[in-house]
Amino acid sequence: HHINIKAPAELLEREKQFFCEILALREGARPDFTRAGYWLYDGDDPIVHLSVSERDFPGDQPGYFDHVAFQSSGLTAFVQRLNEAGIEHRQGFVADCDMTQVFIQSPTGTGIEVNFIGESI
Image 1: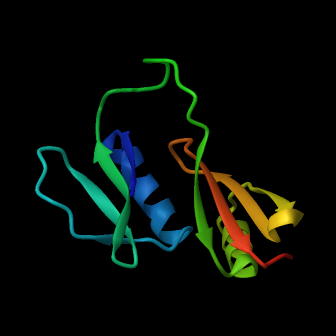
Image 2: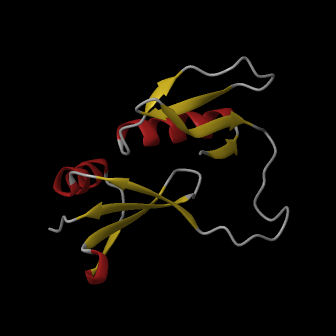
Image 3: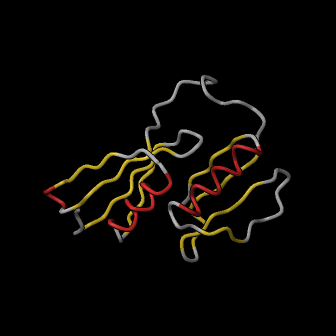
């Protein structure tokens, strides 16, 4: 349904910009919570929630979360957008699924996998 990322306000602004510019999400309606933040939409779905938190979470507790994955289209344009923004990435191809995977990290260090079925460069 969605992922939620908490970060200090300044870093959260960079996170929002990253998700909107690189992953083509858009800022949309969000309930009036006690904490500031954003809901970022893919179509009608608020799939990324961003919440302001001044608490630093790395190392607070052990975890095994590695990444979140999105399915997309337009592989060539996506890779060009990454290159223009100077965002490091790596690609893989899963022949059994005819799928190209692009791996990146958001400004908060969240691992992101973007999958393109039937597309390759």
